[in-house]
Image (cartoon, rainbow, N blue to C red; front, side, top):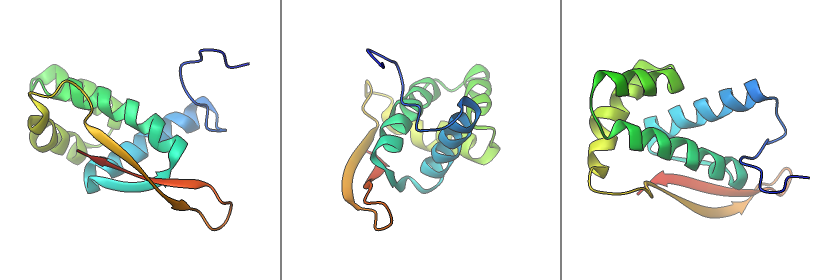
Length: 116
């Protein structure tokens, strides 16, 4: 049973889930809007909002924390220098999830996740 469990397993091992969220976060930062399944988008939302909250403070420790999570220099730099400063005065709620369509292959609900 998953009573009050903290996250979705998404049918993957922990290493695969970590890699999936990292790659989705990199894509979201790079393109600022991506389409994925609803459950992946909901997990990505909590993952990316923690990164944006940390990135609002521009210092060396922030760069190290964000880079440790993303492992990509360009997206780390873009997050800290371009995206996070837009949310200096905002206390959370940096992303929006909009449900779009049912995927044709397996009828899974799809959603667009984007920065507000």
